[in-house]
Image (cartoon, rainbow, N blue to C red):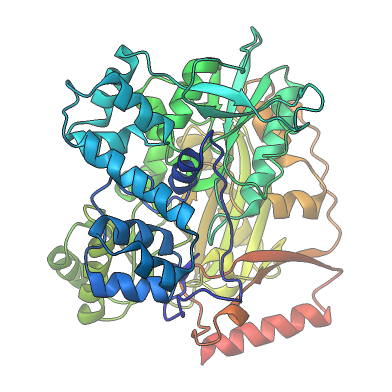
Length: 577
């Protein structure tokens, strides 16, 4: 569910579908599969329970059980832990008694674990917890210690993951599909080959800001790595995707894109490295852990990935290269934000660091709005650094995607947004190639793209967003990874750009080795798709926080096309109100 990015929406679930994606957990028991599914959700929970985030208000719990929302399962757990009788829970939820007993058993297991420390916990109890799907982080919470201490302890006790083959033949014939899930037993069915290997981290569940476009990139990356002679290993938990088809990669691990699971697979398979820049923010946010544990990141290294995310360091890079950018600052409190706003001037674009789909991003026009929004961000995301940019009113927005090998840069596409800057790029109509930027502006975009790609030591894909005002091209942000527009450009120009970029990441090819031949015939328009019919009570205004749940492509021969003229007029009239 994406209620957090659709403020004002009715969060109750019922006959009408409101979800935008799903995950699947596979285990040897219901409890293990349930925990793995919860670990895959990417909602800042370590699983079902055992993280200190239980709701303890009985009235709130009873109301939630009676009027279900996205978090009902967590509240069922909380209600059982609080001691609300099964009969009451069952009357309000109609959930079968068997499932409630399974969750109760998990809570009883947690109470047994809490009686011990990491040094005294019996081997049998640790093994039982792992068989029930508990992450090391959850066990660490119960034992009042660090996750690393639990990891060390279970390895001392020889409690390690093994991998089981998914039997796609239902035992009628021998299954030979390379499709695995983890569990805690003694027999391991995943045989490690002596081939050179590469791991591709998947994009996790579909949601606003992270959709199927990243799975497109993962699949094409896998196919390219195969062509380069690598055994390809895919890790993902989304059953809706092509990457989790058992015949896409050489080996598929249907596991949460969650550090503990990924690290154990890497320890088991011992790949040459891991590709993170194709799976969107889900994969990218694991780059820091990979770097910390000395695991090679294929393509652009962690230092460059982090530099692009750190607005202060990135702006220093722009300054060193004489590239314009809006005045900005970084704050950690509402007081600092108000003080900084007096230097930057309103309006201000306010956004937290390291988020997806413009989450919590907002344009504010006075100190009162600024203070309220910063407090809201810090309440939801404690210790997050908050970026304040002077907002360029009336600017034109554009973006470019490129492939870089560290030396040479090839720009695969430049798009112009129909809406002015201030609307999230995922919610904007984008036209490829631009329809009225002019040679002077286009030259600046091309020069800035090449300069930034090389300055960031990009190896692979990079996306850069621009705001254009008075013929000056300002940099909004740069993302040295696959963007949601890469599949759009690849399909518009009929070129396998992700294939090329992956071969560059692997060091198998240089940019100059490719014979780029895009089929440029007219214009392609990226059309955002919204799910407002599911939320009729929600205001439909667009802004910096993304709301679209998908996109479509439309080809036109020229700018006299009625469709282009209609949307151009409609969007600008709507936004001028």
